[in-house]
Image (cartoon, rainbow, N blue to C red; front, side, top):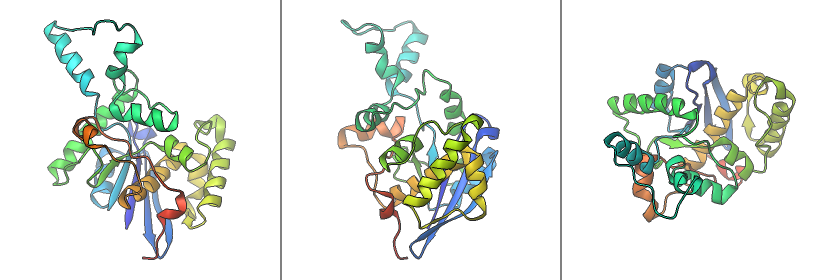
Length: 250
């Protein structure tokens, strides 16, 4: 099995892609690309058994309805609700709220934060995949699954904050050390140096690990009541087991 992890940013310069090859009870990092353009991302997904994308796959349904109503001049504010109370469902998807309930972390709002730019790019990537015969199930049932590295790291008992940006290379190195300790079957090989130098690269690796968990059915999935909404908004697959469950004798 080959899993791909994509740390998707609005522009290629902050986008990283990682490829993990799984066999004989081990995972080997066979390629990492930082500065990935759309063509590389699409090709990577097309060649993967499962691909984890660190980016929202859609917008909140209620936000889409709100913008449509605003365009027509018919916005309605629910009675008895003011401020953040009525804006919560506009800013956060169902899956974002579930992630917060289960991990204490709140994903960035795709409708009220700069991550919306990355999601616009992601929408174009998903459209190209569909044109190539690989339509995406935003609930994670197909080749693509939405992942959230910080939540994955927290669930695995690894450092999940404070390792971003050049000023925190020491913390990034400590994260790599801890990951190697907890996953001795993970071979970073010649790409260990870039993982220690680029938080985008390590987030791509974590996304590829999360893709493996999804492929094995070791992640959260929408309930029957959540499934329809997740099909349009997207669904963040949270790992449900420790890292050592990801390796099998193949």
